[in-house]
Image 1 (tube, rainbow, N blue to C red):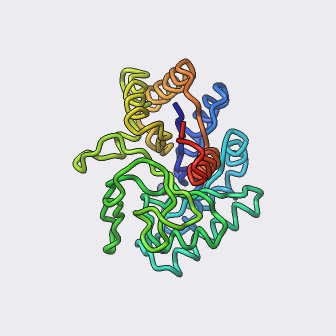
Image 2 (image 1 turned 135 degrees about the horizontal axis):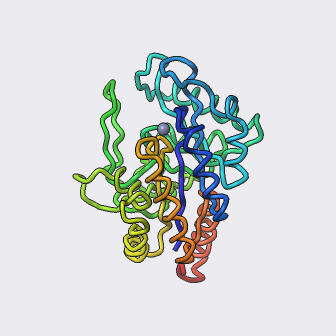
Image 3 (image 1 turned 90 degrees about the vertical axis):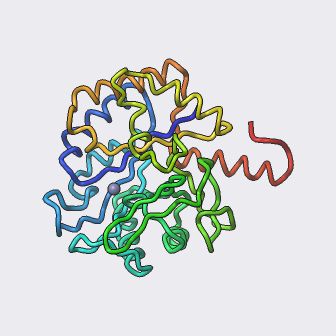
Amino acid sequence: MKIALTFDVERDPAITRILPRLLNILEDYNAVATYFITHDYGGYYTNHSGRIVEKFYEIVDKCSKLGEIGSHVHFRRKNGKFCVDYDFQRELIENATNMLREKGFNVKSFRGGDLYFDNNTLQILEKLGYETDSSVSPLHFNKLSNNVFVDHKRVTNNKPYFPSKEDYCVSGDSTILEIPVTRFFFSPKINFLSFSFSPCLDRVPGSGISILKVWWKLFNNTPIIILYHPFNFLTEAERKIHCFKNFIDDCRRSEIEFVTMQQINSQWRAHARLEMEGSGAIS
Ligand SMILES: [Zn+2]
């Protein structure tokens, strides 16, 4: 069973209070993860603004040594309002990408803030040399402010896919591999975020593993993508960090393989090529 642990690293107090502790656990267990680093809060509207890679270079560098660095952009203007116009998205993603690459982190994977993603985002990522996106989650719908909607309702499967350039919700001709954040319950009424988060934070440590195994079988060995925000650990930090450690420990005992976005990408491309050549099914 393959699990991708993914962290959206925001500029909030958890970056110094929580993330280093999680990194120590992951280091102890030699567990790779993908860290989507936020860039966009340009000092405008939060108390914790600033570009993470500039202000916390050591932390990002450690993340990089323990896995993969990706880019994470919230499409918000200086006043905090959402805006998803092509030019604005392009400006923000380009800035974030350049900054990370200038600092030596050759980002190839992206996740939109609030899981926002549309056909423009796809086009921009292609132009900037990205290979992987993990913004989509099946059935996810969320109304942000300013009439901006995150609408992945037409994506109905957890399986990675190459989106169509005309419609990112269906398979097509893009070079970007979409690796959806795993949805564990296919009922629109259940908030997927709480469920993508809970497997490691249950009050009974480790009880998440059995549900993950069911999903692994149900979705034909599709890698399981778990989304974390370090700030979720700020309340009840000791209990949650303890549960996280137990979860990683249980994964290791169950011989679960941790993978990064780029590792999934290269495996998936190889499978896709084999399938195209008609030389066998995915094992
Ligand atoms: Zn975010």
